[in-house]
Image 1 (cartoon, rainbow, N blue to C red):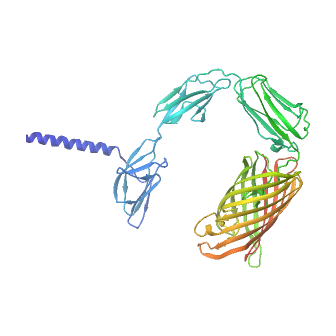
Image 2 (cartoon, helix red, strand yellow):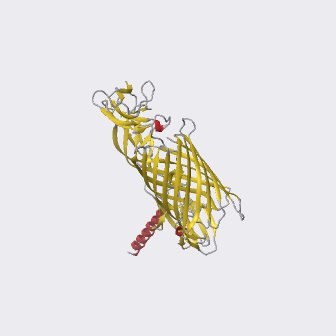
Image 3 (tube, rainbow, N blue to C red):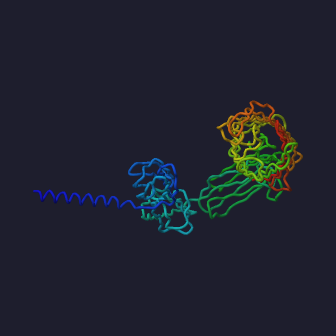
Length: 539
């Protein structure tokens, strides 16, 4: 009986030993990738991985996600498990040492399989999960995907596949001939001015077909006379387009008026739309401001065409003058774009860098804005334009300390009203900005608010040349030092700004060139003078 008990105890110890050995064997020992000493008595461990946001477990307890710094560990050895969906989990043993920060990098292997095709023709287009693929078999993370195979002249083939770890899912497309059909007829611009050679003077007509066939496009005037015609006798791909520049087939510009665009296959499909030719319409020679398109530093509400995209770049050297301080201040170099998102809704974004700084901070800045505007004709050729805007900007540069001037930073709300005609534009704007110094909305900076009111007058000497002048008053509510302490309260005349802007289009190009000269008078500060040279391109 005693012998049997001893034998049972021996078997139990062997099983426990083997179990512990097997458990320990799953955890490989790794060395820290970085070791740094410290003198606070803490044992700090940093866990990094190639898989971001992977779950980190120490001795079975979840501590957080990568990259993770753990400062509350007792010295000793720990079993570390890192896991994330789509990856093989990893089990390693690490050490925490007193008076050391140990960094461990634990990379995970992605769980992948493959998708391959049988009977795929060379002219087929393959999409897996919405992404185009060109070589096969293609490696994919494990999971479920929708496969789409397109071949011109055939119906699209769809199949759902599941990709398993280290397995290959084979797809065999089936090709069925598609009947000839026309769809997705669209016209890019509803109003054009043929006097422009750029995108403002033409409209793009686009459509899709499913197979080879025949289509015709007519442009007719108010009396149903065909002024422009083109046709297609065969197709080799889905997307089709043509451009009408407001001319007849002889190349002569057609008279102003409305024209019907008719697309037909002379059988089952006929679609049409209206395009207006209007030589009185012009794209205003405006430039980017921190609050959207405008003049000088002020936003404006114009009669803007739809579907425009205007990339731009500029350089702005600035000088400071006065008895106590005089000379070079800094140079801002920036670029970005503004564009029509929807009818009447404009979006702009820009980045800026500073060189040769005579101000504190790192030389960068960022700005974005949205502006909604609309116009109403109040008399022949004269329009009332109204707009509202929201903007945000931030910067690592602190200019015009102790602040109180709008530099494009912070959160701003504003309104614009303007009177626009073919010869001139007069506009008024009002904006309120929170966090104006550098975009920070706390620690004193956010309490420095600016109310900026301005007026702009533009003379449109021609469609390709304009001269403008603007003036603005910056009212400040709270001047703050860099440590957040208050310097002064409300200053209604903190800054007085004025400037002129000249804009022109060389020849018949799409390039807009501009020169802005601005003077800024700041209360109790020396005046600043800047000259901005800008280039923008109208698409």
